[in-house]
Length: 195
Image (cartoon, rainbow, N blue to C red):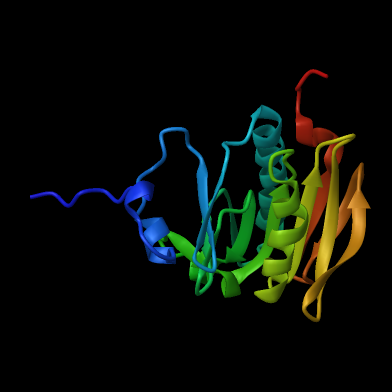
């Protein structure tokens, strides 16, 4: 006898990380995140967003491979705290926290989180998530803005908040929490997308 899948409409009371991880994939491929019992949904990202994410992820990986840094990076993966589940656009975590078969990595193992700005999630990308990531003591946070021009806004953790340390619009080397340096090429992030 099979166990029926949990549906959003059937859920009562505050959500838990376990509840969210047990949800089936949504047919519209929306992302489900959790903040202190509240389920949040965001739409599937568009082409610009996905191409920028893929290229930035490639640039981060190339740097980590060259440096031999003991970290792994992935896009759109589960990152969890006690009552929180985030799906950042890119996460870089200690490789020892990501054994084979990992469904979610704990926030305390994360070195860098990247969010790519979306017109649908501006307050989440610019205010809510950075505040919660800083509370969790994630050492580095980058926000990628696509309009009016592509740029990477680099933040470092200082006490319990992020301090903006650079806005990169061209080619620049950026330190990631004193662990490794990423050679950013912002012009390459959009790849061959037409204007």
